Length: 255
Image 1 (tube, rainbow, N blue to C red):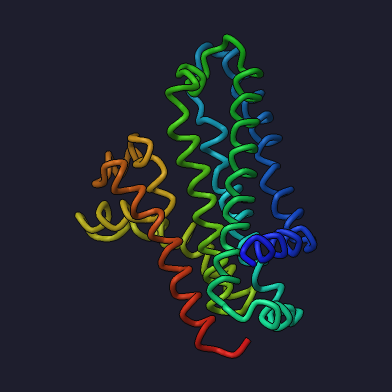
Image 2: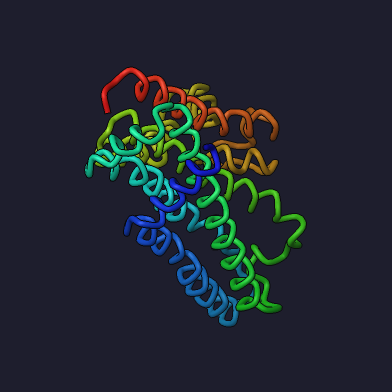
């Protein structure tokens, strides 16, 4: 039964246009990364060595937001069409249904995010060549923790989107919730009175990625408060909390 449910969820995810649209928007990172590298390279040719942000980091919010919406649409589209009721007639155990959907969404977003990040990474380095652009001075091995942390953050955001979409049963509410977690709250946190600005910002979802990779948060916020294992735990907790709330409400309410 479990394999059949997973196969069904995979089929449903492939059947909605929003899946391809969100992945397509996320894949624009490759194009934007190439354009950014070309621009940074032209500055380097004119002015000498230039320090530019790594494309796979600078455009990460695009991938995070796009694939978070994939998670929202994966469940909200079923509520909009009434398909969720049909699914429950076949799979009465709601926990099985939600876990299967979360597994499919998580796998698709992790594979998709890592593919986009790696292609962006390799393309930007090939375009940069032997010019010093700052982001191309480290080896792939040194950059791998950041790439993996970035891919995991995208997966977590997609699962958060799935959980919030299920909890709210609304595409608009799910999108607003995800945007708030990804952009609004992290943007407000640095302006809190010290030392709360650093403490709160440390636990904001976008700021967990550099901490997992053992890098600085930013010049303004410094090194942060969490070691990599703790930052990873907090990141995973976002998805765990969102899905737990979703499962509780999914069981309590009528479809």
